[in-house]
Image (cartoon, rainbow, N blue to C red; front, side, top):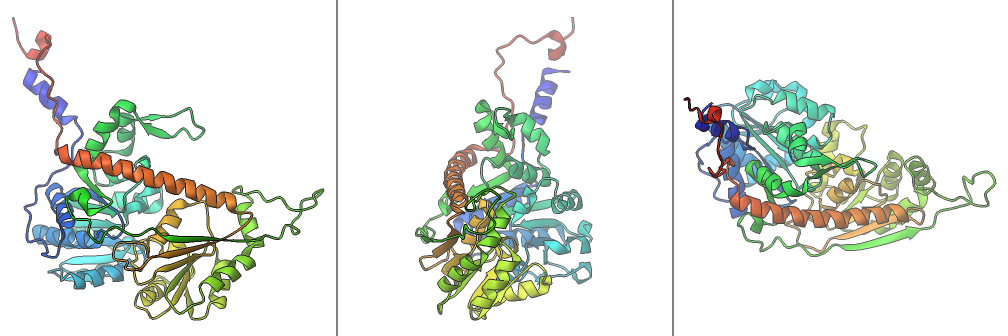
Length: 463
């Protein structure tokens, strides 16, 4: 092996993006600077992620990427979305005058030329080999390591030439989510990523993976070769005017729990435990009081979203709140979508649902009031539900009313701690990615100075 061949071998092993070098076409004139930057990067690299915070225009970026990939490959592009977001995506295409056919499809028989939009639930109804590009809207669906949907997405689109995964800024410490994105895009397998930049922290009970101290800068530089990240337009060279949201007007309402029921033997009163096993039982005992308070807060003449956690809560709230429409898991996808879009259009004043059903992807800037009749240990679901209304484009101060029982205070404290950590991690990630994005190249070459004496067999010299 010659010295030149050795260097080429080292360069081949370096972390790289997957540049396809699509020539930038006629990107929509309505694209703002940060959106144009993200679109151009995605087209030039072929397989990328767009980690943009809520309201920065991910739908527009996805549509433009899909449209230009269709024109480049001659094959239709597919955008997969959460429930009810497909219809919203079609509206966005009409709003921005996307210059090709953009249609919602239910199965492969409806696929034509242009950009096809479908819900994730219908993935198995398509011949995925027919598409030249795949776009995952709300791609945090990849977060579930080993989940059926994640596995199906990995398998179905392994050979798709162009890919874009779009989601809000992930937590920089959520390494599994970043790893799953990198693997879906064909950049690097998750286990390879972990072994290269992370160490399994055996000092914690969960043995979490954490970045090696010396690898932090190099890791984010690698992430920047295949993604663009922004919490504000200025992170990608844009202007922040109109994107600085006021703080949420948040109010916590505490209802008293009856400690004279479900008393353990030998005790004078119940001592609640907010463990995973007792959590749902305590919720049942406080159901009526919490729902009554939530219904009281939601009784006015303006749009309001009422978030809950269980079917019993949902049914009770729908009965208590005049004019409220309910969305629950047993409904057909078509009925769920109809009611979500009906609320978006102002057909219904109030909507009662769970974060896992309608907390991802939908835009409800017309509504500035959210009531949480129930909370859980999941900060992600709470955050996503909050951001349905508190997002760029919201013209009013958003009010959040959180109803908890006095036995649930520990859960709310956990949510607050996670919220502070999430905000801090987002700031760190934005800083790290801003620096990495300014210096990252598609390939980071090995360029060690020739200050060492190499063995004869490496230099390729013979006596």
